[in-house]
Length: 315
Image: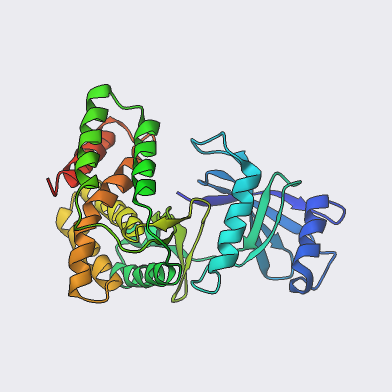
């Protein structure tokens, strides 16, 4: 998962360091301070933490022109600008690392405040205080979805699902099977949404970080609007299912955590029922996202089996 190690120390005269000092303004008192650079591993781009000596302050920098994940070809400038706009839009709605600056000349860098804390994934692996942490994430997503309402574009959700299937390069028989299941879901009405919203779209447990009792959402590069609000819930539920069922071999625990998470997102019993009608579709999506990773034969087989089971839940 996420880790970091020291890679450099920047002194006055380094162009990137001097630009950071200028951008941060009054946040840095000693304009001549050295800046220690820590590379953060496990991200889909080059990401570094810049710590200002003697200031007790750090920022995170994501370099869009330096991809390290499976996706290597995309519009780096457009992605940088889009995430910055999204962060500025939602910073008054939910807690996120404050967006500070972007600059395409420095490998399309996005700079935000650095939040040090414990991720939701850490709570999953330790199985400590997880109910309370899931409640906090559910409430954060509720605020995000409620305050970014828009029209719902169903075709966008299905196009996204088919894009994930395209990326998996499935055998023709398996692809036909998934296409048929998606076709059945298209014509169902009890899970449709009257309104869309902006979704995180990368509700991976490492992207929710707790500092004391406050939860911060990270990495909105993949966020998009006009989406189904259950999309984010399905990704979180799929992560819980995968971790506790496959890694811990404990289906009962995964179901309890998923139920708790969904219940704490809901306003009433009727909404809980509606969400559970939509949840299998987005859990299948969340599971298949994982299959793009090099998980090993046994784990990948589990992913496909459970994704198919989710999509068959309402047939």
